[in-house]
Image 1 (cartoon, rainbow, N blue to C red):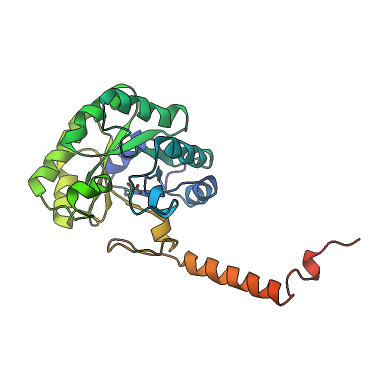
Image 2 (cartoon, protein in one colour):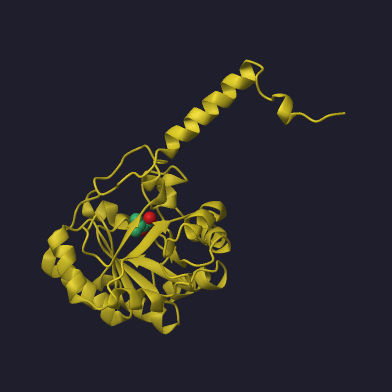
Length: 265
Ligand code: KIV
């Protein structure tokens, strides 16, 4: 693991050297500090905050102001990882000019180092304008959760030709990296081999240049549902519930606070 600050150039070097890139979501200062210290290469302030923090059913409700707020907290807690601000639904769809302004807010107000936006060939004009404004853009193709209603649900994407074309087009438009979500392994492998920019997979098999997961899924803090592609490495939800019920029991039984938690006169 490189000790120096991870930049968009590091992503490129890592793909060239065959080193896998790691990315996790984070939405607050404390978590960012922990994940950064643990050595993750990139922190994505994902619009998944809408589901795992705000309790919404999908990623559509989270606003631009809320994303800027969360990104600010994460940037404050990060020393090494590349901080990616996720452009929320309707922050880049209405016009290219609005997209550039909103992308700029992530860097200027929040301290992100790049932005991510969903879409392939359909958002190339936006990717190009953002990149030309000096804002590195990470694309996101395949299962794009902001299009949940258009896709008719969270559906694995299998149109190989369109997906390979999308990846090539976002690269041409200036994207420095691309997230591949919900794509069968052979197709994701083909995409990874077809482009020079790093692919970061989520539900796209092991041959992508890197992997991203939602932090809450990885540590077992989101219990509503667990997608097939998630590996849960810890049971933090259970640990928290056990700790809290022990606290409640000890207070009710008069066991807490004990003598060691009290002040002398
Ligand atoms: O918002 C998010 O968390 C994401 C990742 C799952 C890629 O877009």
